[in-house]
Image (cartoon, rainbow, N blue to C red; front, side, top):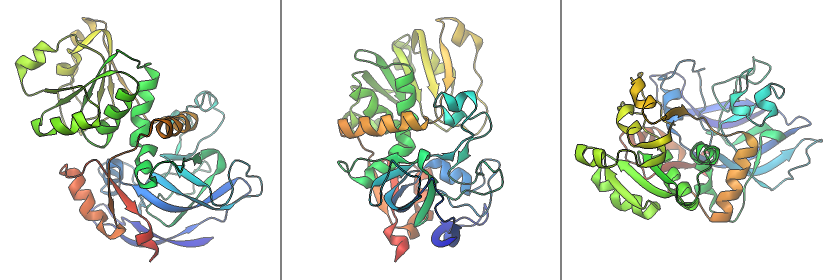
Length: 349
């Protein structure tokens, strides 16, 4: 075991603070990574503050990890010391269920091993995430990262990027498709960038008129206020696909009405309580309301390669690790454009 520095939440009502944890020595198929940058996802906050059930304390969050290979196991063939790599939202799966065999490890039928506050496949070893100086991960769950792009801005692609890329690819977004994005935050700004790069006609749907300029800068072709009911009626039956990134309470039925026949609305945000959906919102127009998680390892690598080719990264604000509690509060209040990223050198000093 190697002891490394980290930041952890020891209880739901306690701020994150310095912590030390033991990382395993790299096994034959393991890659040890020196973490350079780690994005701050809203999921980190939900987990650290006990807002989602099942948090294992103490918890070291972080699943948007970019770093350099420090050591490799004897059977590792894809990576060498010094390579730039990434780790996303999970670090293992059973490998043999029907979903794993179809490169859908995120939906592992035997329980995917999340990067933090979870268990490895032995069902007893707790996982700790990227708010740490190093991490050890199986080679098959490590991703290649291009050095063409600024690494601090690549880190959020490991969650925000793949979470939005996956539904856009699954529903085959192409040139001329009319795509709407609900909510301009960490997920929403990536959905706009990616959909626009695929040739879609992109509309940002928002309650905040001050976000219009940013939406245009990010690639949206249109900006529409959802607080204007006449405006909402005007857009009825417009979109092929709606990407809903909002985690606050809102009426799904209002947005379903904006879909064309056979249109699809994809839920990425997680509101705090159930939302009512009327059967007629789906029946009239043969519309679909679906959910989507992150992508599997194969699709995540595809996304990283796509973003490198099209020079797509997240808009980020770099922080030191001792600013993490303030960053959590600012994220909740919407005071970030659009992703905090921790410079992990600040933890090594």
